[in-house]
Image 1 (cartoon, rainbow, N blue to C red):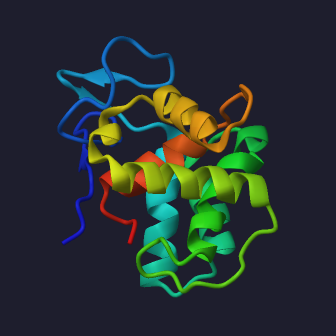
Image 2: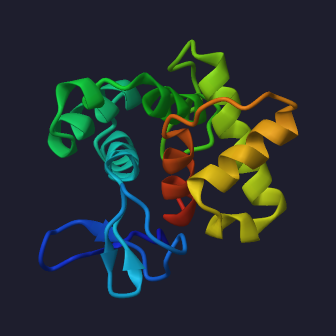
Image 3: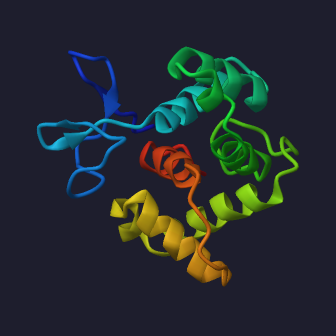
Length: 165
């Protein structure tokens, strides 16, 4: 059974029961003891549901979900989270989405795939912040510090919602 987030009765934003991080973070809003998902986490889950339940191409599903959830056009077309999602889909790692090439972005696919591998090998990493998981990915790949561009939000949202296979 898929574990989907609850929905805040006031703002209708989804959230998980346990806090994903400790302390204040600018792009998350605390609801009691729980943390509201970021817009890219919401887009990831919505895109998976659209692609799996309506047999949509994951690219179209992402674009539609982004239009529904993200207000700013500049943010909506942000490539890194989209390409991380499409990379996981292309590898057959997202439930309900057939394995086939959806992206040419090798870097974002690699980052997302490595994050899933780390989560599979050590499930306690699911409680990492996106920055902590990103740093683990870079270290494991032997890469220098690169700025994180929401790829880990995509991975953690799908992981915590049991949408990674």
